[in-house]
Image (cartoon, rainbow, N blue to C red; front, side, top):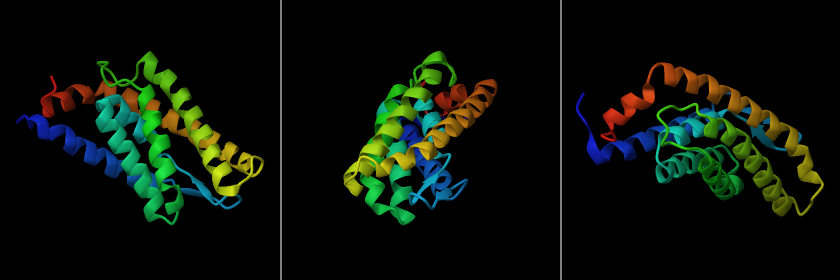
Length: 175
């Protein structure tokens, strides 16, 4: 295969951002009428991006993909908070390991889930001017965090068996 050099990482970043957007906005997008929010599995792909891409690229892929989802599905008020929350979530993962599923990335699922729950709770506190009302979002965010972690682990193990990270590194010239 031809190596793409420095252009490979931005292209891979854009592909992850698009994947994260589509999964968040349209696939397994479950509205929660009680709160006006929704449960999605986009975070699983955010975690994959964070486990494969270097930090600045993972921040871009995750933040842009998830914020676009809010902006283009009627939740524009959440786009900036989403960009910030999702950008922080990727910081717990490492892309420097040879595999996707390593101890640090498993622990990162819990830390990222906690940041997601806390970040959206604080966002709702600001938007609703209430500390009590946003509590209704917590169960949905817990479900989303657990489901995203489970999907991430399943996909990550598959990626590791297929040596996807190795192949991508060779493709983008990062070997």
